[in-house]
Length: 494
Image (cartoon, rainbow, N blue to C red; front, side):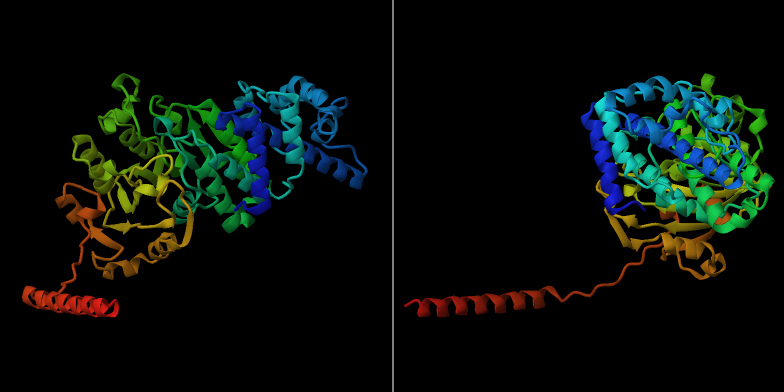
């Protein structure tokens, strides 16, 4: 978590960009991303130099060739603002856009990055702004991977323009909850078909490092699989793709499969049944024309609603036995349209619906006030739903208003995880509790309604009141006391 001095430094850098005329938050993040990457390249080259000095050998696959020394961060950052601006704009920026063509050994600048950098633009407004930002970035120690990651997450959190067209960032603690509930393993092939800034993929990579570091770094083949074969993300926003791929890189995943794709419009047979874990928060807003929607998705559920089409897509992408944790709007669980009922019946009867976690409406503020739920399911193509676990989340550790102030003592997330990992004991819980199990047959009898209020029982406490006559007698007594007090006050006043 980025706090204190580091947070203040990032805020100052942000204000410098804003005052310099870069008013679009996405553009600010993009430009700072490029500078962080350039700084990282210099750090990697320095490590190669030190290794060569220790061994007495030449530098292995240098990032900067002979004659390119002036392109290094440590060199141009020492020059005058005008010269620095010219060097970065005319030489450094074109250099990093073509870096992946050389394919350096550390994976920095690999094919994913290079592909998304094709249309990138250098938009630092003036030499003064660039020099100021470079000086401030120089004062931030980013040698620690966690610091780089937290810094980047904090910058992404400042994108106040998100939330348009149904796109908004998923809170990091909600992402972490979903990852911990699905517990990725090194054998998983993980996908987010609406990846945005790659928050789900990054959280999954952090979980694997924390719980399975011995396996993912066991040998060169394992390391390559982790860096190149585990994480897959699609998006149709080229800016998000650049930010997402860079976000992955700054979190230590060297060459993930982050690519342009309109997931709902393009039917790709190569991706069908490819993934063992899907983590996603797809766009809620909007409807698609039937003509622009992949025909195989319409065969699963005939609808124009993007949230339903994405659920159909998840089922197509998952391999048999694959699992998913996805965020859906409240309407998916309760809407009575034919398409909604068809999709819910498909999850309950043909697949294995594991859990429905109802979230409060303030979770996505200030971007949106929609009520949402987390669905967890397993693709079986043969049913398997016995009981569905419901949880009524009331608090996520932050205030549910636009300010979203931290309230760590009021979070249901630890309780959700504890109960999820001990589902056997959930059999005994009453429907009036925070969580409970509902048998498949009961869900079917309720037309496959998955809203928690359909099954939750509310206990009312009987409150006994005094009779109206007794209440009137007390009021008479009080009035008499008040009158006596007023008379006594009048006597005291003469």
